[in-house]
Image (cartoon, rainbow, N blue to C red; front, side, top):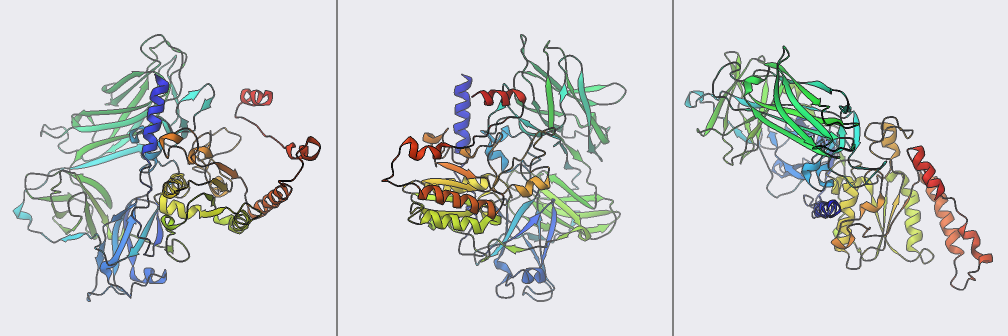
Length: 609
């Protein structure tokens, strides 16, 4: 039954790749890119755009568009005394760093992701700017300041999150091995607690300032606690399970408030959620206890925390920068007073409603005042307020390719393609290899080359090193080919995103810049598997590659060209009229076969094969 369920989940995960991630691109337009490393309000100036090569002096500002996370983001354009976009003007918008938003597609179900707050690949997210005559998304400027016309909104929703990334957990373990597919519980988390024989656990603090009506009975909405924890052992058991984990609020003086209590078995990702009276929190900082309870009579019970969060109603309070959320209320607009924070200028942007808005902010009587219309779509709206002095200027704007145009792979001849995915660092050697494979001597193949960074931008959500940039590109090519591709050759060394901290291989690309730079073209999963780059494109190829796949794990052009010369020498020696006898061809069977493993047990087993 477990094997059938695993197969079903794997098939469901393959269905997640029905879109390629490039649907937002218009291939007749130029695109420029820039990097975002933290959430916040950003500014693009006229002069910086012009210096980057974007001819903003040749088209109306209404044509400017910005994209992030594969969708258009709204812009606010500040114009000076003239209606034209000129040297005194700028563009403002809200942007987010990278998290696990795209990683979710690697799992059988998006909810299986262990840590949605921390990306498997990169904190940096690449955004894009372009221009076209089609309608562009803009913030509507809300100028209403008739404060006496509306009742005061008493609370907004604040969210405090703590995400852990101390250690990588591999999900299900079979003996000492792991499956390369991404499974529930795989991802980054904190240190391991082991409650097999003794109580084990720890306290985790979250910031909870300015709780609305704290200590009073104002019929406040409940607070909401959420967390994900994972198991990292699978001991023999005879009772209800081999894991027992519970969350509490530490209220001081030895008093604990119960949140969740879960008994389960095996390698699993456990989602915890509990609503409770907001007065159970502490106004300022709330302490949460995760406890592994040793009551199951098992040899080990290892568990770890991926993240925890608390959402609670907060009295509107100003800060240098804040992000809060707002419910719809019975009146059409919400009058909010954000107390304190000083009188330095601020901007306020609102997202999530039918119309994105920039609202008017005015400071008097020790508070910032603003009016925000309801969402009118049933959603909470996100409010972002920032001091203007903290707005970040976008720099390092560059074209996505030398021409500024993305490669439109839907227009290439993909039939029987010999696909080569490579890193620009070894472009010279790649082009020599491609030329050989397209020649008579090399097989007269229909060679299609793709530079991996452009694949991250087009198909990988703007996340460098994300394997979906490669996989979704290959899926696209596979789908458009009438005669399916003949081969996939990956050129360049790959380094895993995560290695055990005590591994002789050192930390992976996620935690080590040296490993990050060394990884020219990433592979898929842990243990790394290039085969999984093309599995799942059709039910027929759920477990086998849809395209025959190989890799030449070179670090530079010299290594690649040396390899190419050996290939040429070998293939030149092949002749249809050649005599294939032991005496003539035995030399071709003399190879070196390398094998290894993380543990001595693995190395011994491989040595005996």
